[in-house]
Image 1 (cartoon, rainbow, N blue to C red):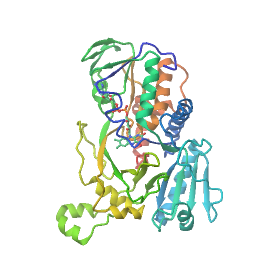
Image 2 (cartoon, rainbow, N blue to C red):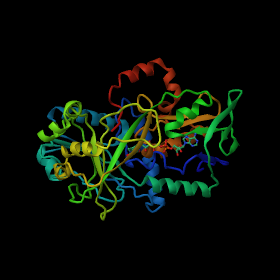
Image 3 (cartoon, rainbow, N blue to C red):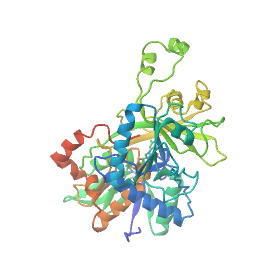
Image 4 (cartoon, protein in one colour):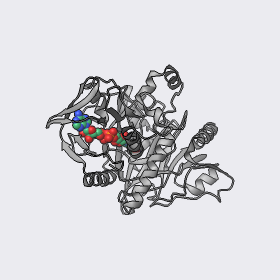
Length: 429
Ligand SMILES: Cc1cc2nc3c(=O)[nH]c(=O)nc-3n(C[C@H](O)[C@H](O)[C@H](O)COP(=O)(O)OP(=O)(O)OC[C@H]3O[C@@H](n4cnc5c(N)ncnc54)[C@H](O)[C@@H]3O)c2cc1C
C-alpha cells in the first residue's frame, strides 16, 4: 500500500497469522551463509524496515537486538567458524571483530530495545573470555560468535500492526478459501473463492505451506517441499538461563545423556536411536519480559519432508530431547532432566526450496507472483520480501538481490550445478 497499489484484497481462509506465523520463535538475523550475499541483502533490507516500523510505532512489536550467540567446545570447529564469519561479513552483514586475550572492545547487548550501532559480529576466542562474558555456558566452551544485527520480536503484534495500517489504507480482507486461480490466454483473470469470484489482474500466491497447491490451480509447478518443525515453551522456574540472555545456539554435534536405567527401560531400537550422534543446532531464547520465566527451545534434529496436515502431531518426547541437547550448552538446565516443567509443544511447516531460498517475483502465468518458501525465516524476511515484491508489482528498478529469488533461476543449468555444491550451508537452524 505504501507504493500506491490500490484495490487490494487479502484472501485468507483463517484469521491472519494463525497457520504458521504465530508458531515461530520470532527471531531475526542478517547473519546468513553464502555462497553469495543475496540472503544477507534480503535480510538487511527487511531489518531496515523492521527498525523503521519499530521507531514509528513506539516499538509496538517489542523488537530486541540481543543478537545470536553461536557457541562451540570443539577446537576443530573454530577455524571454520572464523572463516565462515569472514565470508558472511564480506557479504555485507557488518564487520567481524575478533577478541583474543582481551575483550575490552566487546559491547554486551542490552536486554531491550534496538541499538542500531551494533552490527556485524564479535568472535570471542578462548575459554576465559567466553566464561567472563557468558558464565552460564558449558565450562568447556572455547569460542562464541555473537552476531549483532539479530534479535527477536512479537510476530503477532507486528502482523496486527501492519494489518491495521493496511486496512486503514483501503485493504479489504476476505475470509474465504482460494479454490482456483483462473487463467485465460496465459494471464490471471480472477480467483475463485469459497465466497465468490474476485476479479484480479494480479495475484500473489502467499499461501505458506499450501503455496504449491494454490499455484498448481493456475498450472504452475513450484519446486517446494515442507518439513515439520516444533518448538517447546517451558517455564525456567529456577532461572537456569539469565533473563537477559541472547539467542543461544550450540553448533557442535553431540550425544544425549542417558542414564543406565533409562537405557535399560527404553531398550532396543529406541535406545539405539537416542544414542546416535545428534546434529548441531540446538537453540533457545528467553521469552517475555523480566517478569516471565518462559524459555523457547528448538532443535531440528530430524528434518524430514512431510505433506502438510493440520493440525500436525508432535513426538511427545521432543521436549525432553531438546532439553537434554541444550544441557550440553547450558549445564544448569540439567536440573529439569526427567522433569521438564509442563512443556508446551507446537510448531508448523517449513515450506522450502531445495537450497532454502524463497520465491519472490513473477511466475510463468502473466499477472501471477510468488511470495513463499520462507522455510524457518519468514518472519524476519517478510518485510524485505514484501518490498521486493512491490518492486516487481510496480515495475521499478529491482535491487541486485532480486534474481536470487526468482523461480526462473531453476531454468539455468549453471545455477542448478551450483546449488548441488552448496552442501549443508543453507543457513537453516
Ligand atoms: C517452529 C517454528 C519456528 C520458527 N522460527 C522462526 C524464527 O525464529 N524466525 C523467522 O523468521 N521465522 C521462523 N519460522 C518460520 C516462519 O514462521 C514462517 O516462515 C512464516 O510464518 C511463513 O509465513 P507465510 O505467510 O508464508 O505462511 P503462513 O503463516 O502459513 O500463512 C499462509 C496463509 O495462507 C492461508 N492459506 C493457505 N492456503 C489458502 C487458500 N487456498 N485459501 C485461502 N487462504 C489460504 C493460510 O490460512 C495462512 O493464513 C518458524 C517456523 C516454525 C514452524
